Length: 566
Image 1 (cartoon, one colour):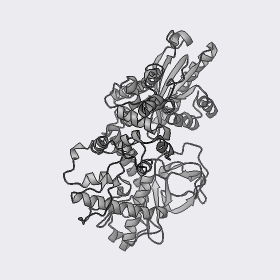
Image 2 (tube, one colour):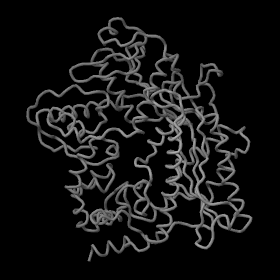
Image 3 (tube, one colour):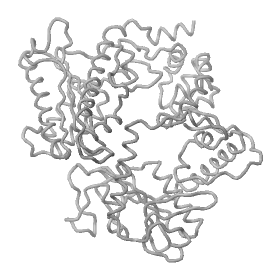
Image 4 (cartoon, helix red, strand yellow):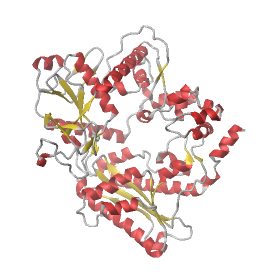
């Protein structure tokens, strides 16, 4: 949730409470709610099971990284390490009247200290960076070298946290260069790059957890100070019982525990942010469009003149009408997705960055007169190619090879009989990550396809992204997530808590990695994962069937627009 200022000078207010390292990037509206007297805290939602799993997994990762760091003084306040000046400080305690925080590491650079944080996400990709990527080995944090074959990932939340620590060190007179480092998580699954200059090739890093990725924070510090000062004013106003901000929906809202509070206000006001991405909201408001009714009543020439990034300007009014009338999808024209004689729905389940443990398939037909076994002698229905080996790396390759053999068998049977074939997924980016990386990581596994074979399939007309089909064929005023679209087609999941993050928590328990640490596989959780995956592929099949049938009866975008104009 991004909150807009209400304008005007704020009256004198009490000093704002000290704010932590995530504050600069956090929604001001959320800061207001957390500090406002009598805030409806009982309205906040608890993290879902998958979110809790991510938190637990991130803590485990952080502890594992800390164990690999060189020995150094720990848990010292700034006054103590400022006096002793050790070369490294682990988990220092930084605090003053305005700010508090605790980075995982401080590294001396000759002038002062640089902060380092640990995060449970990728920090690099294959490629190159401009300026060049600078890294240090986790066990040699002072040796900064250039890594020519990796590209730095700039996670904005990481940079805000590092800027927070740099400013705190500056305030204490202990800052070095305005640089911060991030230690991440994720295997460099492509070919192991050459060793950075000055390192032993045998010791070349192969994982984001092995390196500190350094970021120059100079361009960010002024904006950080401005954002932080504004958030202090927001918190101070909340403590005094006032409010300097009002809600506006952005991507952060999806995971915000205060969304149930703000969403009611936005719906009641019919706020423009319900229609457009956060980056477009200031453009719309600058044009005098503050609500959904404002858009519906606006002159067409004004709407088409807007420079928007998230919505084609010609669709804006249709989206507003659909939102007003409660229409989740509006066809632009022919709503039907491509169909085939033999159809295979595919959905993959992965565990964090470790790999894909389940490839679910649903074999069916696009014809009403025959079943798959009649057409290609392969029984239809759901097949889940899964590995629940506690060591995912041991089972992932062979499991993928079994999945690929089934896919290849169905394609070959269609070719032999002169039948058309199509495989469907929901958002190909997720599946293709593991379609390509699995053969790259396990080329020695019998039956493993080559990268060229995978590419030939994904480049063909047989591989269809149903998400892209819906996006291109419909005006969608709300979410494009499968969990939001499939119910429109009359489909519902059997599990009361369906979701990718939750499925990772179930997988953890299924392979004996549950938080209790018992090491005993939870067999019912295995079936829960399989059932959830089966429902995912059945959901894509249901959406496709709906697009070819009932969706044809919906009013089109042109019809809605003409009706509004008339």
